[in-house]
Each structure stands twice: as C-alpha cells, then as structure tokens.
Image 1 (cartoon, rainbow, N blue to C red):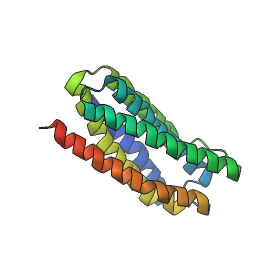
Image 2 (cartoon, one colour):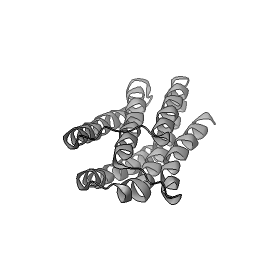
Image 3 (tube, rainbow, N blue to C red):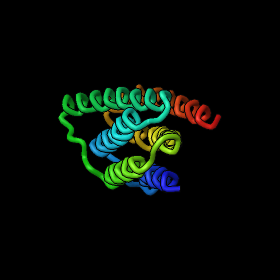
Length: 175
C-alpha cells in the first residue's frame, strides 16, 4: 500500500508539471532542466537500490539499466546547460520529485525479496508513464531552446523503452 502512495506522490509531482502549463505558468528552460535532472536522479537512486536489494535477476538488471541510462541523460543535460550557460532552476515540481524519490527509496529499504521487487517494478511502471506524460504535455512543448527541446525529444524513446521493459518485468513477477 505504501508503494502505491509513493507512486501517486511522484505522479502528482509530474502531473503538477503538466497542470502548471494548463494554468498559464509554463516552466522556463532553467526549470525544465531542473525537473529533468531531478526526475533522472529519482530513478538513479531507486535503480541503485534495486541493483543491491533486488531479489530477482530481472529486477537487478533493470535497476542497473536505470542507473546507466538515467546517468547518461543527466550527463547530457548537464553538458548542455553548461554549454548554454543555463543553471538548472529549482521548482516546486523538482522539489516534489526529489521528496517523492526519497520517500520511495525509504519505503523500498523496508522491503525484502518478492515484496521489494513488486514495489520497485510497480513504481517504475507508474513513474515512467508519468515522465512520458510530462515530456509530452509540458516539458517538450515549453522548451524554448532548440537544443534543450532536442535533448528531451531524443530522450523520450528511452523512457518509452524503460516503460515497456518495466511492464515486461512486472508481468514476469506475477507469474
């Protein structure tokens, strides 16, 4: 039950990013960069924990992939904002993502075995769907800088692949 609440909290944070646009206060490029870094870090932190605490090899492998892929996206984002001389700006959305990520990791640390695997993978499915929705509805449409928009568009297929992989692992855990 805790994992559903944590996933809902992270979904709220990413949903908040989408609703901000609907209210007319679209995030600027610096805020978008901050959201991207926070969203990736959330998955890196959970992935590291899955690598070390995962019960099944599929969960450990998936966690390792999340660390590798999301670290690469954060590296690209950091290089781009450095090049553009833009400092990622904190926002309510980025803060909510970090808090939700920390709450998720704290919850996962209390779990073992199959319960850990289920909670981790269920969270990854919900989280990646929310990230894709935020990319499509808020982050990509509001990115003003062409290179930042390009990085977001280039990264989107990886999030879709992660979602599909997480769903596959989720299905295998139920068997």
